[in-house]
Length: 92
Image (cartoon, rainbow, N blue to C red; front, side):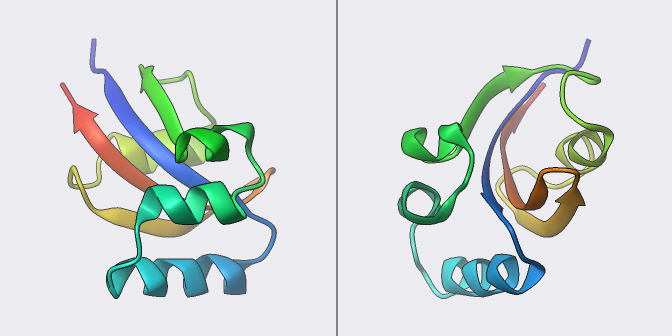
């Protein structure tokens, strides 16, 4: 079974998500931004969600995490929780 590891930043608005993605593209550290901005408890761990398999996260997450290039920052991804930036850190 496929497994992936990812980290994310959860915010309330699409505009905030886009702004954070731009900061990352200009060199800001993903983990630092997660600690400062994420509304998810994982933010305190730099957004790290650990390892998981298909179906363990919401469908919008799975679609990105199991198809995006490892290391790329994807988003905004809208879920019932808000808007996410996702970074796939590994996949096997």
